[in-house]
Image (cartoon, rainbow, N blue to C red):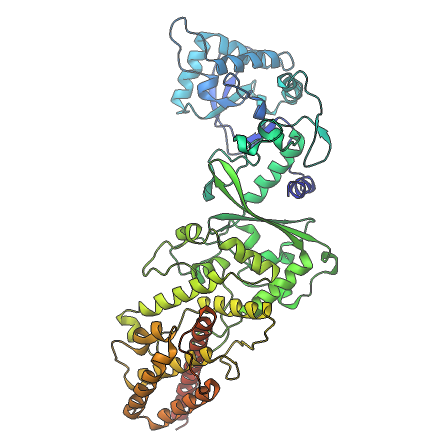
Length: 599
């Protein structure tokens, strides 16, 4: 993993020189060599290359050079006779040393050593409302000292004095394999604050507990890396985390071992992020900041498989990351072939193919996060479901990602959670739902989970079960056709009693999906009564024919109880038959309108 990140950083030229870091400067103290005039210039949001002590700042008496907090550069007025704080004294001492290389810094040293000038600087900073924690630096004669090449050259040599006197290459770097002086502590990784990370960054390599150490090594020497190599890794991770989407409380980071165009990136098809959580998942736009996932629909190249031939040898890498107690938590790391990835994603979308609730076509592609929401516990009126993803699905999401990318089986928990969501949603229908034109159907995205789970489970068991996009009368599953029967019974009741308060679904679904033999007989008797009440005898005959077709497919045996797999077939059969009946109803309505228009 570290080597792959290292190669990415080198390829993208993201690395910073050792001992430097990019920072923003809130304000500049502007001085002149010729007089003691002081003014303050506000900085902008531009990131500048600044000297950084990093892991060399052992103890409490050192600070960064040239760019530091106001409280260190210009501390509050000390009491009479009090010595300056250790960090402030260190800051001034380094400026004296650097002024031998960059003479303009002598004006800064003079200002900090002269109480009258220091007080004038403090007053100007107060007037400009520069806070103690804001970073400040210096300008002399209009020149920014941060951008001085002389100071940068001085810093490269000066920082070496903080290394151990006996420091010599004693270990092999885990990243490059070259002899190195291991870093004792590594610099923090930025970009995980939104997923539990610390605002100031999180440690990727740390050994602060004795249980993690071996052979009496201290701190990060247990995993030796050179400062230069780790700087490249840090730059690579910081870059990848900037636009990485959040998935169930984790940052989804991915890259390839070569540069490819965005339209050739299969991960764009997964389309993760949301912009506004309160919107319905199917209609939420893509977060514009997530540049890696701008595609709302699957690119044609993923469906067709017609990728550029020279990409077949490309490898992909995936990291699922979060922050815990100021540490980077690696939830999963994956590496695979680009060609296999495209094939597996095509299979994923083929497995998902399922008719929509109206039976007029297949369900449109939606974001992966929208699918994951259908595995949460159903809560009616929930306005912030995304906040629950990281808590309820943190352990399940990595396994789902693995199954999608490797064409593997989904965990059984996916089916159990999808069924629970379907059952809770159906049984929570309010009065407005009951007055709808048709009986409520299971959630379409939850049914897609069931279809994929069943298909891949059957494949693992070497079973070829023809689960199609629409209802299949030839599917050899009694549970499936029991669900189909219940959908017909519900439609018959709705046609005969459109204003019924509590329908078959609300009253019997929970029992039928677990013990169909106990319920199907009762529903059959009720359906005969409903068919007799129907004024449209032609429609009644159509429903009776549908019952006959499903009963023939079902056979003579109705199971007493259903296990998880059979319940999934039941829910899928109920959904597909409901969609088929809805389609036929629309067709009858359209035919009637056409006939009326012709007359």
